[in-house]
Image (cartoon, rainbow, N blue to C red):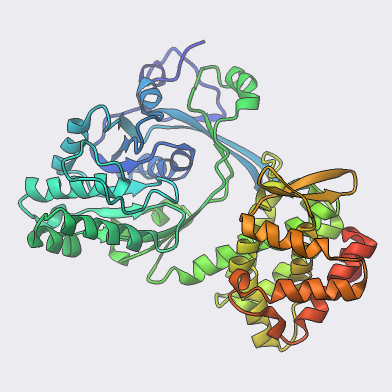
Length: 506
């Protein structure tokens, strides 16, 4: 079977399936340098730039830099930067499958093998945008690297060298600064990247003029990204290849939903006109409410639901959505308890929540509850606890579902045996591994080993859990009525089963 390439794309004798959106591959100016060639950036940012190009709003190519020594750049170059993206999921209740060949990537560079070619990018007058997704650990200070390393090991190190080379190549021309848009999943990603770059510039003695140029001529933007990119469909590849009619070793899959919140000067929107192309990109002077919305609604709905649902016999998010009881539990917690604590327009919050429910019900994504349950204690602290405290402050009473969700967490962490770095829990019919920080697992193991089955013993256990300020940041027993409510819910789960406890709650 033929392989996806520029030659195939421009071959008039080859007939692509009518369901695949195809645009000819043309040479464009290299305006974007992207650190990262993984599934997410190809299914999110490169898809957006492809949309800008096809709508005649950008006319630029992406040059991909492989951030670590071993990656996909060779495979990307072998296909002339081309790959197929399948967007699959629910949209307004209907199943949609959108197929498109993405042509926004021009070429890839491996700086570990061709550092000089990487540095040449600094001399490109057309270059304007830096994109990155080098994992959460990618934006970090590496004390051991040097300016003369070829290349520096860290992403901030590579970026600092590139920016300095650009500063020198254009004699500090203010118009040759760059718009730097990191997509790493850490809070204030742009601020954190800027901090490391400035630190390296100082330690490497790159000069005050360079530091001034960095500050005044470049934009380090904070962002929030949201799209589930499921990547290479290994289990379906034979069937999909037959349907497409060509081989694509970089075939990528994702959900239709997308959101990119960018905090920065709104004048930059003219240079990156994503909204003009109809994309769900928000330019804002303060991304805090949007981060709160995502953490409390999307992530919060997961953490609020999955532990109780797993104990009630469910294994995937899709099963939760298909179960009336669990679905109603999630809706009540989300619409009646979480949304009232967020300071954004009600319709915006409700629309976002409705989109979350469609995403959870996506028939193409198999999201296991045990995967989401990883490190649930820290997740509860950041995703659920702020909503509980805000709800109490605003309403003067406890939120019933969110309070129940902590009882479900305590019940889920029931176990006394630690085996291979996991606490072993037991659900009727099977045992499961509870994964978290070892000190947390040991603490729960010790508490549950003293449980004698009585409600009094459950109350003692709850009080000890809530008193752990290292986990929650405060003693949760101080919340009026909280200890008793969590105890009642926990005892109900233990005596009646999680499903019946949820039913009683609702």
